[in-house]
Length: 324
Image 1 (cartoon, helix red, strand yellow):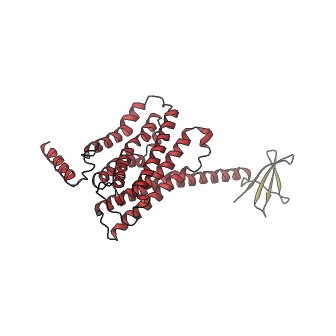
Image 2 (cartoon, rainbow, N blue to C red):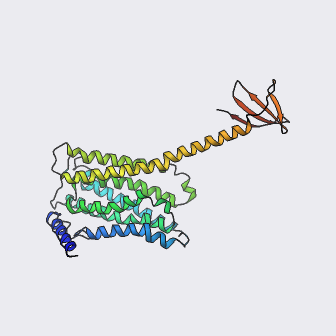
Image 3 (cartoon, rainbow, N blue to C red):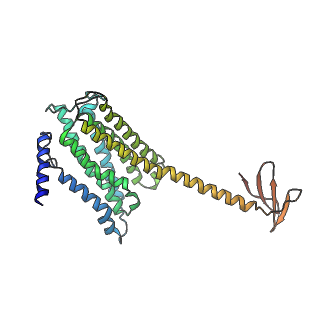
């Protein structure tokens, strides 16, 4: 225990010595351990404690709460996006190289404050998963979902602690924009079936997420090839996070849409083949005039057009299906 406490004190000294003094005394910013504890508690809650609590209970109906929550997230994300723009990305910041400004200039401090609020927003997003647990939507609590939400507060903490502003805030700019669209979708979905039928664009949200991470990768890793007064450690930190999340979302997209589409296509093909086999049995005897009678039905086979026609004896056509 003494060794552990010594290590903790050593880390704390590094954080105090190298951290940004402007954010040192802000809520949850003096040490990474409270944030780390909250993240681990979230994972335990949504993967173990929550499902166990709901095991023998009926799912909660949270329609009004979901509408209010998603509306709040749309407004919150819109405000964060606007503050990122006003804090520098609307004109002062360079997309090529933007060092961190450690001054107390009002515009600079505006960006520092929005960095902290962006960090705080990662805790509010825990409610996405908690609502899944309470509604017993455990199939939505995927590894991707938990890793994404569980890692983000700790990742953003380092940015607010050491580099609140500058090049790395491009991540927040894009992410808040994506969240405006994402939570708008969730808000519409929460309104019920009358609106849900128009939400055909769900899969494009995942595509937008992947495009976001590609842009963040390019934006971060460009600093490996140009001279910029920005810590290389954070270039790798942000860039590798984008790489990890890109491949996680890509795997989710493949499993949810590509493989599911292929599965449905194969299922439809099997149904079509089964129907064709039922209509044109291989042991059916065909006379020279192309007709035969079996079980009160007449079977016609048009060899030239490869069509199978099943007709009642009264001549009415029941099926007309192409045999591939």
